[in-house]
Image (tube, rainbow, N blue to C red; front, side, top):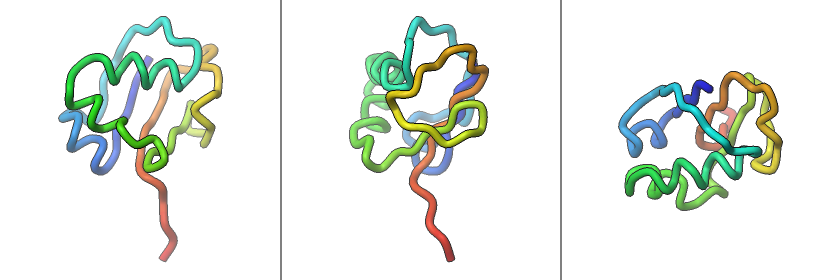
Length: 81
């Protein structure tokens, strides 16, 4: 699965994209798995109220099943302007 990080998440984690293998069933499970990797991931995901996610380019909630998804993206909330 391809995981993309945008804005300050990318800066905290240190990579814009990575291909991973996971046994996670939901995005929330994936976040927990990633958070346990290193302190950088833990810091990036420490406040999920400041993080949004997309599954195969569709905005979803953290309890969404990963299913056959090929891509998960994490990014801060968007604002208009």
